[in-house]
Each structure stands twice: as C-alpha cells, then as structure tokens.
Image (cartoon, rainbow, N blue to C red; front, side, top):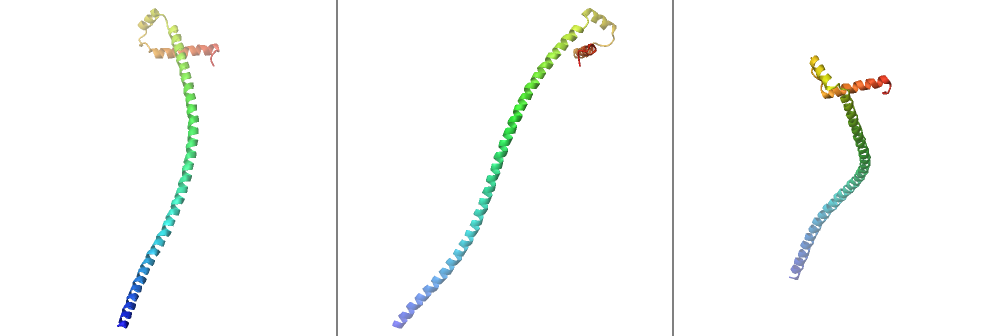
Length: 151
C-alpha cells in the first residue's frame, strides 16, 4: 500500500507540474503580446511627440505672421486715416471753390429785365443752374487764361 500511496502522490505532483507548465506557457504568450503592445505604444508616443513639435513650430510661425500683419495693418490704418483727413480737407476746399464759382456765376448773370427779354426772344428753354454755373466757370477760366493768371 505504501507503494500505491507513493505512486498516487507522485502522479498528483506530476499532474500539478503539467498544469504549472501549461499555465507558464499561457503567461508567456500573454507577456509576448504585452511586449508587442508596448512597442506599438512606444511608436505611437514617438509619432505624437513629433506631431506636437511640428504643431509648436507652426504655432510659432503663426504668431510671427500675426505680429507682422498687425504691424502692417497698423501702418496701413494710420496711412488711411491721414488720407481720409487729406480727402476731407480737399472736399472742403472743393466746396469753397464751388461756392465762389456760384457767386461768380450769379454775379455774371444779366439783370432780371435782360433775362426776361432774352427769354422772350430766345426759343430755347433756360439752362439749368448747374449748367449755368459750369458755363460761367468755364468763361471765367478762359478770361483768366487770356489775362495770363491761370496755368
């Protein structure tokens, strides 16, 4: 009986050793997969670091571009403001010239009695005020040229 008990114990130990070997093989496969995942994870992290560096360089370039555009826009805005003030001044001067020309045209018109006689004798309708101002201004400039005062 003692031999049977020894064989039973030895058989039990052998079965347990076989189970341990099988479990070790299973763990070995899992560890190999884990190492493969670790390598792919390292590659992914490397790509992420590279992409982050590229993005940082692009952001730096964009900041530089924004700074340049801001400076250019500021100078263009200042130039536009000056141009606007200059144009406003020229428009005011133009209005003053128009007012003077209107006064000249008004002064150059014949008295009202002569206008009535001209209207009765002339079949053509009376010209508009703007046309009269333009004609008077043209006559004035021709007189100035003739006298040598205008360029």
